[in-house]
Image (tube, rainbow, N blue to C red; front, top):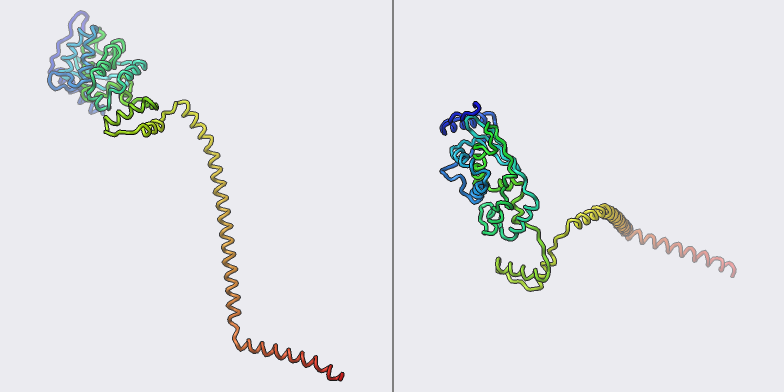
Length: 336
């Protein structure tokens, strides 16, 4: 482009043809292309997509360039648009195919905590959050121009390879509008872009106290489930549910890790003592069994002696006794 001259006009048809050729060529090379395809005039239709586009249009810095961006994104000139943490990468077809990178600052921690506080108890599920089924107060909180989820112009850092000298060229504007279309398809990309977790708006820290908190617990149970509890049961529930502090949990984990080796040693000594006792008991039982077997064997041997043998033994005993009596009687007869 010569200095001081307007660039050559490129019709919508030629831009679309260029975009399709570029997409086909990059797909052949193995690159996954994510073009922005808009059906009809509406760029965004969901709560999050429309809120993003309305947020851009609130800033005077973008007013002059946004209309050209709308025509480009509607015509299908955005060949590729990918959103990641703190970054938007895109390709837009104009006179040439231009590479675009937009860096978005992470949402400040204080700002995110303040949003969490204002939304606490108002969002019942992640599904409702992503579908945009929110109360008016939550909508005002998340879409606030200065303190909401959407980035301010100072947090958006733009870069396009086109020769346009303006900070926000029509290619960049088309990509920013394309983000609104992407949020129609996947609203969680907004939280990914700002580096926060949408689940933190639904699930917060649990603080359970006795006394006044018990009445709140009872009321919630009655309203939601139709369950009515006594004061004693509610107080027991509140006493059981405790959320330990971070420091205490670390100390407890260290103490437990020190105790575990001692308990293991004790269990080993107990196991050894049990094994010894069992071995002794088995030995005693075996000795008793052997003694019983021996006694039975002796009894059987004694019972095997025949009656005739017993009679012979008795006869021998009687003969011996008679012989002894005769030997004693003979000396008396000689003397007389």
